[in-house]
Length: 244
Ligand code: 6GU
Image (tube, rainbow, N blue to C red; front, side):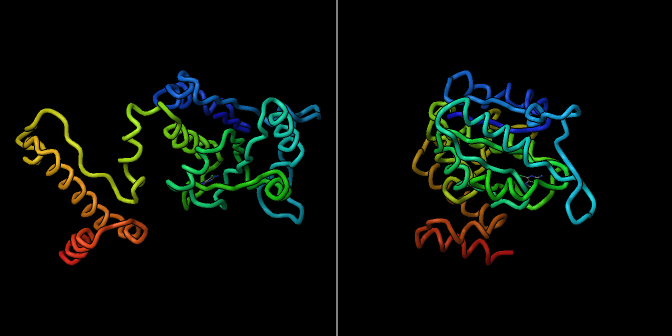
């Protein structure tokens, strides 16, 4: 897939996009990323991208023309036109389902908002979607764009070591992940759970599922409402929440 990012601070992406999973996805050719600066799409001497708010009030607002012109040019660079997504704390909350939906698109254009906001006509007539990564305010959409690109990259075929890792991991099944251990089996007098040394794969799978359920019940009971559980699993959850 192709992701175009529209940002006043393109330099914020050089580190994150050149390491780990995102770099691997780009090298594998399953993810193409391009960053564009709306300041390059201004025609005045000072390349102004923001202005005072009509009606007054504190803070500057991102002007519509550089964003519209930048997105028009970016859409003309390749096919298809792509879904235009504004990153804003007012958007719909990013979660596993939203990531899967975004990852299935052939092309995304992510606009990073800045200053106190973006001219409303950009939201209404340029963007197809608005995404937030949580209920707190960032000074700009750039860190959120990095979060979206990372989460979406992990869904591209061949990016993870095994396709199973995606299915098994936290949130894919609506549950938190079970505890993981690696060697040594005893570290600073702390042993790993014995079951993991038993070689009984079915018992280990059962233990892990139970740990996922207990952990989710303790830490994120809100997730359990959506999870698909058997009667037996519901019972485990009830028992866990009953013991304080
Ligand atoms: Cl997408 N942008 C900004 N500026 N702040 C945020 C956000 C996005 N998501 C959460 N906070």
